[in-house]
Image (cartoon, rainbow, N blue to C red; front, side):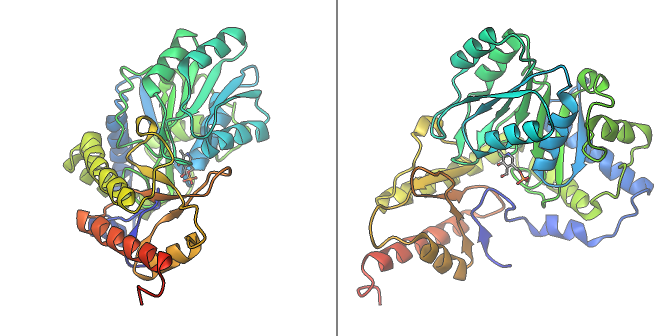
Length: 368
Ligand SMILES: Cc1ncc(COP(=O)(O)O)c(C=O)c1O
């Protein structure tokens, strides 16, 4: 497929990342074992893992890593609180319930940030809660939750934090030497700009060590996967060799592009440009500025008879620009992803095409 993906992933990758997948690797070969170790170390460095945390790679998309984390880290005597303000929080609750974990939710509106004060009050009132799971950047809307305050609230209450940082990892910096967090979950194909197929969890070693035999699943067992890597550097089951090679390259490129702060600066410039051009068309962001991230933006669809998202999508896709539908249920919205290896000219071209399509929809005859 040619063109650009203005989506939250899979996203537009570079030729260098794609070319890294041209080689076939033997999964038990010393060179592949080294590649695996370097990817684990590279991710750990981005997370500030230090000596306290370790990176466990998982075959599959991000959800597989989330499920492995919940399955393994929440024990039969534990109780998980999922703090929810979007689809991905709801998914964690569903996963925990399906796994038979003791789980409850503290819910906010999808357009509202998680409130650390309410979280503190909830934890005070519910001493049985042992773990808290929260989404760092809710891709449902692009809302960035106040991570530092949330992590402080959870730590002050003496509970453990499991963070779904899928859409933020690699752009919004995390330093596990400072941030009290038991586990951070993310994947290859978002802000790291790799290809889809690997999820990972950067987890506290001391906690992992306590979790042997806790996962009801053989494949989604973070403890056993960790022990496998530690024993011989190999994956327990067939590894996604080409995807790992692409991720290895993507991590090198991530560092060369200035790491998380470099990525965030680029995404910030993209998001500012998109917001400005949408404003010129009378299209407003759904979230107030204080809650918006630079990874993905949600816009209110024009409430007018001429607006047709499917037609807009199709006309843009025909020109190689793929935007993203909205995920809110209460209002009509659409989303534009600001991540991936898209040059500024790519954003300009998409936004010019977007304006032309909107113009054509508003005044079909004049545009002919
Ligand atoms: C915040 C968040 N969590 C979890 C997921 C699930 O990841 P995947 O679709 O790779 O399974 C996503 C995917 O977009 C996400 O944005």
